[in-house]
Amino acid sequence: MATLLLVRHGNTFEAGETPTFVGGKTDMKLTAAGEEQGRAVAAMIAAHDLPLGGVISGPLIRTRRFAEMIAQAASTVFTIDERLCEIDYGLWENKSSDEVKTLYGASIVEQWEKDGIWPEDMNWAPSEAKLIRNVDSLLAEQHKKLSNPKTDATRVIVTSNGILRYVYRAITGKAPDKAAKVGTGCFCRLEAEGEGWTIKEWNAKPA
Image (cartoon, rainbow, N blue to C red; front, side, top):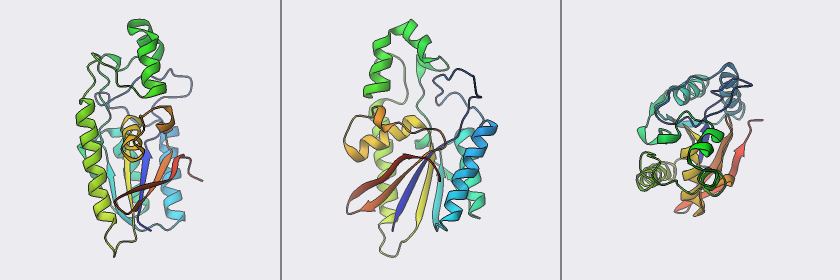
């Protein structure tokens, strides 16, 4: 079965730290717990003896390192795709949810976190329209590679939560709302069927 595994990188905040909106301009490393999450995903792939047809990563350190662990466990290499770079959260970057609510109002944060409504005038980049085009083109390329009749492989993409929310939107046609969120170190399993994708698992933890 032609499978695409979408993986969110591991933890970048230590236990007890207040998480902030960390986007494309903040290049954080994985914590020790984040490294362990990477090893867990790599072990899951190795345990299922999945034939990897490619590992693709966003350009940030946290996604590159996570992809490196998967690729090393599978004795392969990974490539970088700039379309997988996390959203630049503009005026929200490096601020906690509470800080953003204080500065710009609670409703704008809740609309994004719960309903997946892109906030206006917050200097997010790229534009929502460009992000959608990036995700659509990436999924189309992966579908073409996996739809080859001779293909029975698994391709792995390592990226961040903001990008994964828009993958969910592209596949389901629904808003990238709270149902689209993916936890750190978790994965989503898609299968290429017909001209589209079927979600087999979303926001799953490696067993």
